[in-house]
Image (cartoon, rainbow, N blue to C red):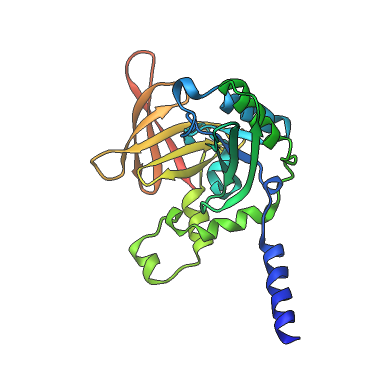
Length: 256
């Protein structure tokens, strides 16, 4: 009896902790799917993207600078999509798979078609899998899974010695607040050598920063497409803004 109780408890805990695809809001679809590249793409990526949009998911590309602020600040709200070729001798078959930020499979479904023509057969097989996907109904629990991905956390040596709480450090490094006049901004780290400054009111990237060989000096690409330089000064971010006469003015983004 005791063994049965333990077994049921384990199942219950697993059900509580498990996530379903409908808990997520964002889906990242690669520009090229590994098993369906080039002339063998058959438009499967577009079919997948359009179907997921119809089910109220937000589709993201591989370029993180194009991501909305919510996805950048909480990458564990993003699922990574993949379509695998499961072809057999007589049928065109696919496996549709979605993995979370820890590379754990959240959803997988197989589809197959008796149509011999590759393009039509793979499309029919994929559409079978898409019929099984529920509409997006995001869960706030997904945000907490970010703490299971320590490699995303940026820590200083001092923080490492103090054994900080992973989620607190991740949140701090991912979305630091700055202001310029009455406008608020967020600094969001998207890679070890790259971050973006996002308008806090519109969630639109204002500038993208990429590190240079000199400490605290960055190459900056503005939302307008212009390239310039930026740097830290007394904890604030300074961007040299190009003017129409060829000169530059410094804009100061004050750390809050």
